[in-house]
Length: 241
Image 1 (cartoon, helix red, strand yellow):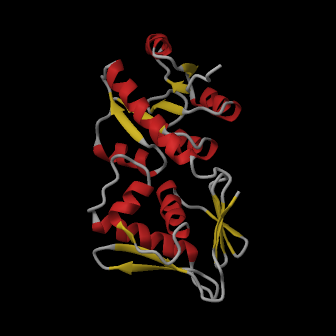
Image 2: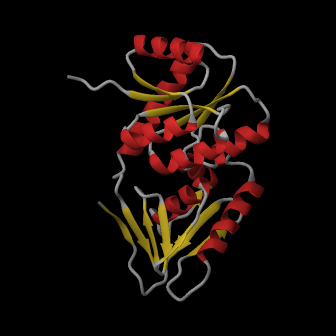
Image 3: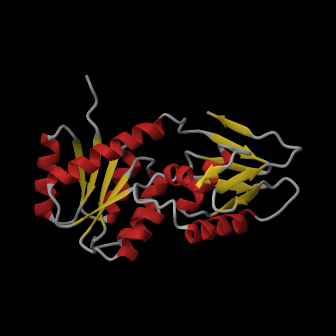
């Protein structure tokens, strides 16, 4: 029997819960509903969803904080739903781990279309081994655990920083253009022409990595992109799983 795509719907409004549960169920999705952040984290820990739909306006926890925690627990796409169309909050949600967003009010047809796109992106991501372990110099990345360590010390990277570093480590020595990096970072709203944003991102990751004889370096190719240079004494591992 074909497995239905599984969705966790995080929405505190009971009427919206009932309506979306029925509407998405009719479109062939399995839907589990959480009405609070606590319930959402519980479901995310139990299930392996294909998509998470997260309403940022929850009663018990800030939606952005919950999004950050969900990104640690689940590898699937997260679609943020918000009644707040302020750009800063939307950008922050995308930066900390959301893959797409939709502003209320919206039609079920639009939401269903966003889910289809998310599922396609999720399938593409799943083609890469989920439990991949990457190494470059004395930097180790556990993709499944969303964890980076340098010389045995665990770093705390934001979602966008983590994705940026992973893209570089998967392609040691290769120049990755801004457009390639924007695609690798996964968000449909990721901009490849905002040079200042890329400079800030690269600078923060460099600072996190620090320096050392075995430390890989992030080189800037002006107006083109970035490449990861691994110390010559080390042979980078492309990935094991």
